[in-house]
Image (cartoon, rainbow, N blue to C red; front, side, top):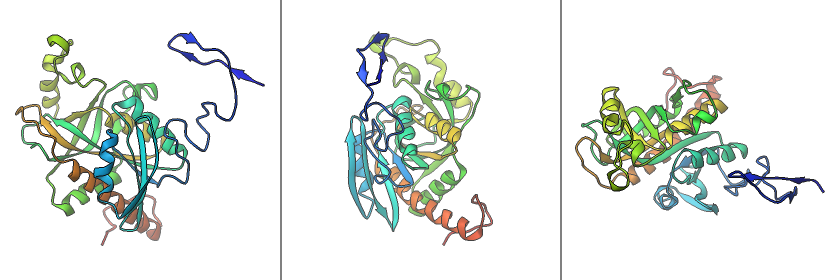
Length: 290
């Protein structure tokens, strides 16, 4: 029987038999998410926190949990007749990248991050929504896919659907550039343990403000970059928990982000149907939705 050695952290494990249970990324049932092609819809909402799943599926007509392994919890259901899934990704780019990789392998092609963020423009109130149009790649995951000057851009159809959903629901929202970091503390200009300050952290928020960056979180730029590399659609909508300018903080707006992303999924499905009927590949201003 063939064997393979796995190298973790510089330590070589004993040889293990190469069987059907090995870490095959092309297996039908995915290694980390434990989902297969029948478990997920084309569009998947991606919150970080597994506990946010309940707040998302509360807006659906029906749902069923399909898998729960590690930080990855997946449910699939429908909203207004549109199939929809949700998978929690945990915190940060590395775990979000695993989710996108494995969901794409079982057939999903559209991803919408549903999260929370810190706003860095004074006019953004706690509870408002931020719809990401592009990302500052301060996380390291996307650099392992493509050169660092490759842009992290949201798919314009996803952005359009999120904006339309927020407008229809009457929620306050902003669009703009999101900075994604790998650290909640020093990487976002916050003091670390015992007041530690990373180099440049005291000027980070001011520099981002001056560049008209809207908000800070930890997953969007990795998601957008990887989706673009693979030719997939992706976007992000985050509720503002904190405003780094005013100092205001409240865990508010989760349900608004969840409802907006859910309605956007339905609108994307309608957009795709109109495109098929019109014989075009991409949504444009000459097309309309009822």
